[in-house]
Amino acid sequence: MELSQDTKNILGLQLPTDPRWVNLAEKSLEEILTDHAYCEQKAATTCISLIQRYSSKEKLVAELSPIVTEEWGHFRLVLAELQKRNLKLGKQRKDEYANALFDFQQKGGDAEGRMLDQLLTMALIEARSCERFKRLSEGLNDGYMQKFYRRFMESEAGHYTLFIELAETYINKEKVRRRWKEWLDYEADIIQILEIRGDRIH
Image (tube, rainbow, N blue to C red; front, side):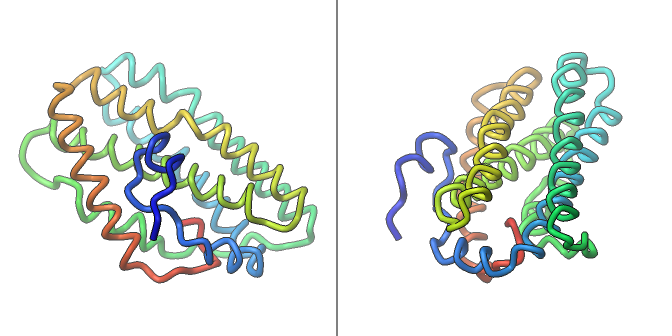
């Protein structure tokens, strides 16, 4: 599979989303919107958890506070789209992609390493989400939904770099970059292994 330059240069991701995913997603709009809504909700609550856990780190608190508001606003936008279409917000599903990333996080050892992995996990989820929104904005046949997802893509585009920058604020940059490379390689393996599902954002 050819690696697109925009994916490689802008987001750093090692593998692009399989083009078939957009076609499957278009056939499962209710499920995609439901999963998208929960992704935005989880992004907001994770930022709240990071603020609570690292409340002494002033820059982290200051930078993530508006992200909480933005992500929750995104949840409300997706929920409104479901309601406009007379679709239901279904139950939250198991997120195999995110769970696979959590498995790679440092569990014990030093606190710095644990914080680094928590921030890089969020960076990677945001990067992949942005890439998926780009695919939807370009590949859906519905012009309205193309614009709908372009809005999310543009809004989310800077989020992943923010988490990396926060990591570099508190941790040696060389260590951050080295670990980020490990995360990118690991995520590429996940993308190759996971089933292509049209009812999931990830």
